[in-house]
Every structure is written in C-alpha cells, then in structure tokens.
Image (cartoon, rainbow, N blue to C red; front, side, top):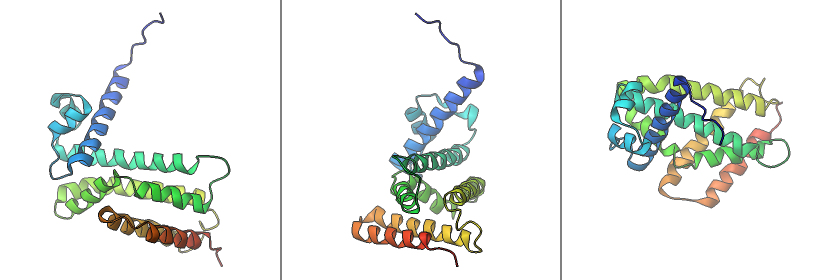
Length: 198
C-alpha cells in the first residue's frame, strides 16, 4: 500500500475554496440570484457556513467570486471545444465553440447577475473587475485566433459584434429555441470574421 501523501495547508485551502465556488455556481444555476442563500451554497459544496465565511465574509463576496469562477470555467470550455479533434482551429470552429459556450445553462447565471447589478451598486462594483478581466482574456484569445485581423483598426469592434450578437441571440433562445435562425446567425458571423482586411 503506497504511503499517504499529506496535503499542505495551502492545498487544503485551495480545495475548500474551489468546492465553495463550484457549490455557489451550482446553487445560482438551480435557484437563481434572488433565491440564492449561503446555506444552499454550503449544502451544494458540502462545507459548513463557518468554512464558507472564512473565505467569503459576505454573500456579495461569494457571488462575485462565483461569477469569476464561472467565467473561468466557460473560457476553459471554449478552449476544450476549440481544440477538440485534429487540425488547427479555424474561424468557423471558433464561432461554433463560442456558440456552445453561449448556449450553456451556466451563462444564464451571468445574465441574471448583470440584471441584478443594475439596481445593486455593491454587486455592480464587485462584478466590474471580474467582467473587465474576462473581456481582456477574451480579446487576448481572439488576437491569437485571428492574427489576420489583430492589427485592424476595428478589431475590437469585430470581436464585440460577434460576442454581442451571440449574447442577444442566446438571451432570446433562453425563452424559445430557434435552430434555423441560430444557424443563420452563425453562418453570418463566420463570414464576417473570415472576411479579409482591405
């Protein structure tokens, strides 16, 4: 029998924090922001409220950290989809992988937090650096994926067009799925991204 490997205190803290954030994300997805409680997050995470509050002293701090965790997971999901299979990532494959992210039920949590932040200044203040970090990470990934466009004057506007188009479509499709319109949108976006700069 192999000897037991003792984890360091830092490793135990990291494991506990990750469990809390995953539990909070699942709780937000299941019951929504308005019905979210730290008690339910603890139940999902399998930790005590005392353990939770050692790392996240307020409900708002937990929600903001959970949003950051969700964004990171969505970026990981995008990367996994993009590099699945053989061949280099293409514009079409990137658009398809991004659309998979926008169709994720977890993304609805982010939409709900955006709406709540409009009337809750503390939440809005906490989310701002999280959203800014996500925006910068998205632009950095786009620069690597679309080098032919990266030096264009309107490069960021192109990326925003793709993101905001998908965001609007995915919001509408939360209420009603329209596969034909969804496919048409993706085809249009692929054409826009593949267009060569003048």
